[in-house]
Length: 471
Ligand SMILES: *Cc1c(COP(=O)(O)O)cnc(C)c1O
Image 1 (tube, rainbow, N blue to C red):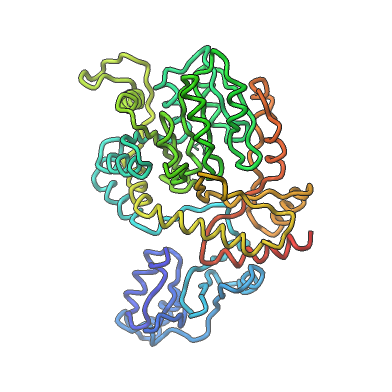
Image 2: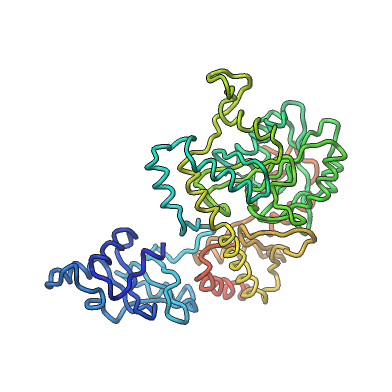
């Protein structure tokens, strides 16, 4: 949290000590009237000043030394690493105007993780507030605020907060009465939770291929896979890309199928102007730590149907009769979200537009810096009617070069990830395969890049460029 890292030079040592106590980093960056960085003060510096006769009313500017180590946003990761010699635990990063935009810490190596939550808003404040309210479980004002706020964000009437994105899928399938003997169509390229939720219901998943350009479920393959037993389709808006919802809804209407949109990776993406989650019968979201916004663990079902909303709520809370406590008419679950989680969610939701913009900026930085790498093909953002968002920055590495690129990047401490394995590639799910022509090829060449730290990510992208240029 950058604001606890920065201290004005005319503040007292007491104030600096307070900041150090709250940022838990052992240091603060000192700035002048012009907001430019002018020094670093550690808790050791303050201790020594007190021993030399200063007191806590001394101004920071009187004891801060002029020589200190910092990095520039234009530095490469290698240059930054070189500055982290022994004893230096934290280095501020400044822009061209010498304003502090971020910092790096002396981890074993200078790593950019694949994803990191952005918790710079009211998250801590609301979490403390929820804690102090003593409403730690499912009662408390933040649950309702998060549900209505997120449903609004999705342009939906109802939101039902749950413990994670996987149970959101299970709850949605159960609310639609899907069970033994029913078939549910899922894409071959997705996180396994999508198909697992179908299996929890004792229904039969039917795995179909994905589109070449969008990487999402192929409507043409859905059509072919339909049988008299087909009950539902779960389109997954993969890596932030909305599925072709126009074709999918047409097929669903014609064949009287339910549509559950798995939106775990696509908060805020739109198809023909409509937010994902608002197009099918139920949309499901995840708020796991690496998703667009997070509550630690968490999920949500959104819907425009009042009766589905009631069903989802009933099933989420043990299937217990609303009027008659401890009376059960259906087998329900405990899939509730806690007020603590929801408090973080409310704060995340306040800044979701900013978070999405920042992720998009990061993707654009990659595209600009790596445009001369010919074997790299970034995820499409020009498909008609589809407004993708950036979850992780994704690209295909062609010419069979993915493995060597991944190895070289990982070797430099850059946290790149392969795509999901196609479900049809795993013995566990293979028997449910209907078609899988494109998925294997895309899964085998796809990689995701660290999608973090907008202000300093260029430092690492330049390293990536150097490595890829040599391959
Ligand atoms: C993350 C994810 C899920 C599961 O969400 P959890 O909150 O981790 O249970 C489901 N589907 C997709 C496509 C996901 O990426």
